[in-house]
Image (cartoon, rainbow, N blue to C red; front, side, top):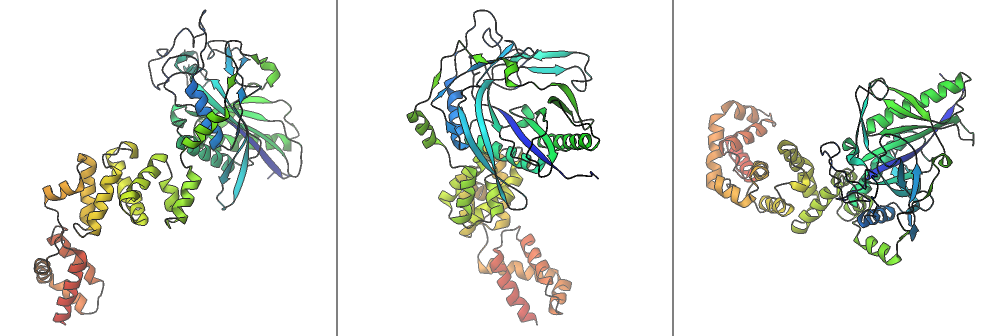
Length: 487
């Protein structure tokens, strides 16, 4: 156990790839997964004569994200050259924003496990060109014998979102990243696929004695692309700092480090430089970006309702439990689907139960996602209306939904083709009830002897004999009447 108490100070730099079709300064494709170096041109490769031309959609996405993150969207922003020499940089510099970024002074409120909310301040969000991808010939950068370079990712538009050092635990860092992913996905600026590198996180960590106002010397863990790795890297690095302080070997030099997931350790890559070391100066080939208030307002009007507001509406207006609301807002597509079903079917809780239960199960079984689901929101609403009207019962409806997911046919057509209409004719149901009683004398005897739970087994037999078509409520009523007659 450490002799003293310590507290952790964490700030995050989140790099998110913007969902444009072409790169930020040229017309090359941003599609993921192309053959190495196939999405390149003289401009993004930095060949002589290539001049950058700014992608307007990337700027608009920057505006959209800034508004959603409560930032001030600046009317004038500038691009600068960030000078560094590294194999993944075809230009030997990065076109970024340093002096006048597009967004400043925002915040994101995160929800913690104990039910509290914490505000994380966002210092800035700036546009920049992504670097290439280094493919190491070994298990990690430290053990590789050589490295290939794929420049497909060069000049893919990035929005780098930089927080203040407001977080003090891995839990808070994860809550922030999850909240950020949710918002960026909802407003449509990024697909937020961490596994494809659409979001990469740099974690800045320092440790100080509890109660101290002085920040410790920080280390930056680069390019973490999974929540699991973020948690482990923070845990490992915090322990490294505390061990150093406890052993009297105070950390004096800022470092950029890498996290080795296999070994569960961080390793120094280089000394972390300051802004002056990058020798920023204005990018001479890109004029100032002028963003009018009219442009900002037009983007604001087109923004969708954000996750937090949607959850509040679902709870307050429709009376859904908070758990339901959280599941239904797990993606914009999911919450849009719910809202559309609600236009045709009025019971929000019934919709929620079916979406969280049978629909999600069917999506998993068929490999579909909510945005390419063969069952449209209107089709699900029609299925629920058939249950409400007594055309089919809930059990049959599950079978029908499975068939809808496979064929894309409407519920009404499937019910007609397969003869699945619910049987509500009293004489027909009574015939099945009598058959079930005659075929199960022991279960009947158990019920008449006072074992009330035996009724469930008899209902099961009735539904089985009717192939699930018997009206359950009517079957229950008729069964109880017959059993009373046998007493």
